[in-house]
Image 1 (cartoon, rainbow, N blue to C red):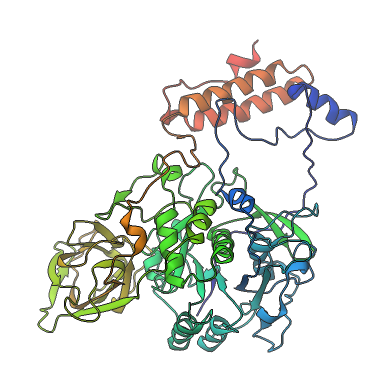
Image 2 (cartoon, helix red, strand yellow; image 1 turned 90 degrees about the vertical axis):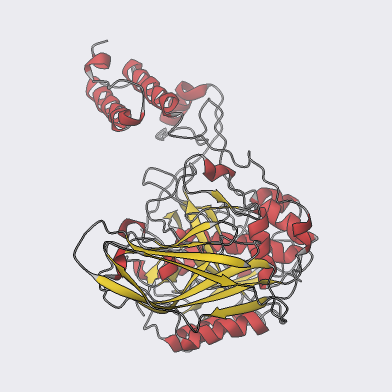
Length: 592
């Protein structure tokens, strides 16, 4: 397979210092000049209107005493600099291996192509309080205590085969708790690909045998194909029942330009948005610190770190418990205002194809984990349709197919409370990327399983492809389902195809999980961020005030004043279409 990293990285070294100065901006400029430094602005980016900083309540989990102690995380990637100042203390050789050279040393070649794993590693396990790069989400540090064992298997710095993937996904599963993967098929908007036979078997082995039968946790980045209209339901790694798929949100709560929509995403963490927003600081090769780690590559290790905190709080959690806790504690509040597509399913869960069930909440996650009652045994019910009649579709006429399931009622695999659903489809169509697929549950939840992918011109269609969704979580599966398949390209070319077969596979429980006995509660003020569309006037007014201050700054020569003001006014005018404010010109300021 061709591997695509789920990040957008470049190396940058920078020397910046943050100091507390009493007296405001003028005093800060004066102090900076006197010591030969450049004043670059306030370290705290909150404005005076009281915008809240965004985080995932990790400090709250630390205050409860959880650091990930005793939990083993491995990064499946291109290597890890095991002797990095911020990683060496937590490095665990028992969870590390070089599958390319077949030796136990995962040290990468020090070049720009092999820094990804080291960056992901730092997010989980950077050492605290050493004045170096930063601190990991699950740093595991306690004096004289057992540290979190953090490492990675080197596998991507070479030829990737089904065998190599299988060896990585099953490596030392009696020792490793969490596998974090920030890679997958090409995010090119036209690839439909998943793990091969050996890799699938390795994941199943980890689920059944890992962590002494409780199941290994496979955390996967959802993908960065947003600019190519990619859909992560065409990525068989994130589309798996057995993986914990993680998306990203920008710091202002918006969906990043690189993000992919799909029904298989469980939850989200913060990452980067546009280029002028803060990026993720972490470890880098050459014993350096990266200030620009980004993409869903950064989100998966953050999620892995939060899960590590929860496994310390309760080592008895199964892989399904971890998914249930994510659904139960994720908070949509920071993401509701600035993003459409939110629905509340029939069981009362908010869900969105961009973000899954919402933003991870580390404190909520570990608090729930502490006293968690294991969910009932997983049941799997497969419904086939032996008398299914092939249905034609074209660029002028779609198909609506109604089908029923009783959820294996009266059988050992009866399901009353859904977790995952897989709709396995066989569709022949000349241009696969034109297709849009929706599924409506018996209780009315409408889920998009596939959106149009403009780059996908393949005539291959879909052959036994399992579209997975978590959007009907906790609903009853029993009753009438509705499948909608359409060509939504907006073009008429006289093409047509066939829906050859459908199979419904549902996963869930017969008995009600204990936590369902109470309604799902939401903190609608969790990590509240400013709605940048509804409050755009106030933001632009701030920009205008800055422009005026620059004009009044007697320390700047006139050409510099003009340059600064032009930059600010450009920002205002770029956004004027979303605002009631008028467009401004440079003459309104420099003539003063």
